[in-house]
Structures are given as structure tokens and as C-alpha cells.
Length: 56
Image (cartoon, rainbow, N blue to C red):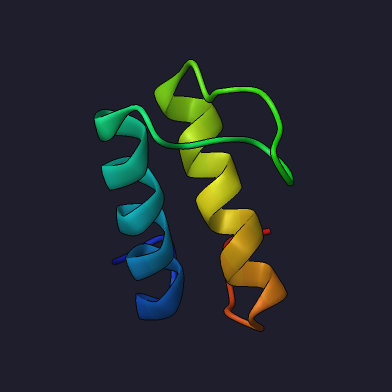
């Protein structure tokens, strides 16, 4: 069973891609993302803003 909705999974995938390229930032023009966990959290947060369901 998947933990997150398809929309949330896509958003996390995009964020992880940016993280791996070194382009992910937290917030608007914020600091560079330094960990995978941080990138996942940002992806889930963006998904929630779009109305996607997640585990919490």
C-alpha cells in the first residue's frame, strides 16, 4: 500500500530531482536544501498546498 497519493508522489519526485541537481531551495529564495529528508518534506508540503492527500 502506498503511503501518499499520486499527486503527492509526483511533487516529491520533482523536488528530489531539483535536490539532486542542486537547485532545490527552501521557501521563497531561501537556503539551499541540504538533505533528502528536507527535500521530501518540501515536496509533501507543496502537494498539500495543491490539495493532495498525504499520511498526516
